[in-house]
Each structure stands twice: as C-alpha cells, then as structure tokens.
Length: 236
Image (tube, rainbow, N blue to C red):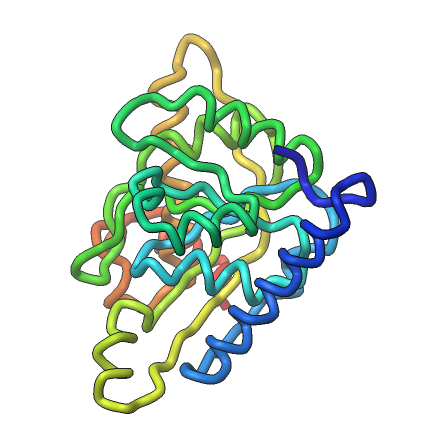
C-alpha cells in the first residue's frame, strides 16, 4: 500500500475523493464539528496521526476533515465482517490490523505507507474507551514511530462518545477535533528498548491528553508530563 499519487488508478482516486466529500457532508449535516489546529498538519510528507479513541466514527471524522488525499488509518480486522465498513475501508485504502496477535504484515504495510509520504492514523489505546477517559496507550505505536522516524501529530477528540444518544433525541451533537503541534520521539536504544518504548508511548499519550479537557484525560489526568506540557503552553 502506497499513498495516492499520479501513478495510481484514476478511478480509485476519484472514488476516494468522493467518499471523503460524502463523509464530510454527513458530519457537517448531522453534527456540529469544531476543529482547531489543522494548520499543524502539512499538505505533504509522511507521518503518524495519533488520536484518543471514543467511537467507531473517530476514523471517519479525521479522514473527512483533513484536506489530504493520502490520509488513511489502521483498522481492526474484526470490522471486515461488516460489508459496508469493509467497502469503506477499501476505498479509503485503510490497513487492516489483527489486534489479537503481532501483525507483522500490517506493521510492514504501515511503515511502507509512511515512508512513501502517506499520513497514517492510529489509536494508541487499541480499543474504544467506554468511559470517555483515556486508557493506557499500547507500545505498538511507539515502535512504529521508531521504525519510520516520522513526525507525530496528536489529535484530541471529544463528543463522539455520546453522539448517537444526541441524534436519537433529534439533537446535533457537538464534536471537537484539536490538532496539536507535531513532534518527533527520541531514539530507542537496543539495551533499554522496553523502557524507551514505554517512555515514548507515555509521551504520545500525554501530548494527546494535554489537548483534552480534564474529564477526558483518564489515566493520564495526573501524569507529571501532562502538567509539564501545560506549563509549556503545548495545548493552547
């Protein structure tokens, strides 16, 4: 899998662009979307988008609102059972990930995608938060970031966890998406690999947490790194 470019099939590019427009119209029509910090993501160049995970719609929101034709995401392979989702993921050129094992094929595809200039979205928590608060991040995203040595764009989402309840009451839910400034993680040394990956995982999660309201920070609410980032004005 490689990012969209002039060598790709023209029909695929058009279908993907159409999908992006349709999803954007749906979000704009049925919800009130408030987005800040989009200028932190450049128009070109590979990287990782790391988001907190509240609902199945998270990936669709990021996909629709970023004005890039090479943004896609890692998607849990369990969603292959849904024919509609399977088609949407195919059109968006998503990368299927088996969360039940070390999916080396998905990792290789992700590395290639980013190294070829694509923007890949990933939820470091792995699963949706049932409470809305952040869960501990998994080291897989830190490993991927280490392998590609690309910038990370933290994205904080709120509102999606209660969107369906609001829609059932004929109310337009408010969804917010805040993009933080990009950063690059320090290297991972062979002798201290496990500790370094955990340090880098915490850094990713704390950057996301610093962009969120206190009630969404979950296990990172009292993390000292979040406090440091706040003092530095990172989430402002």
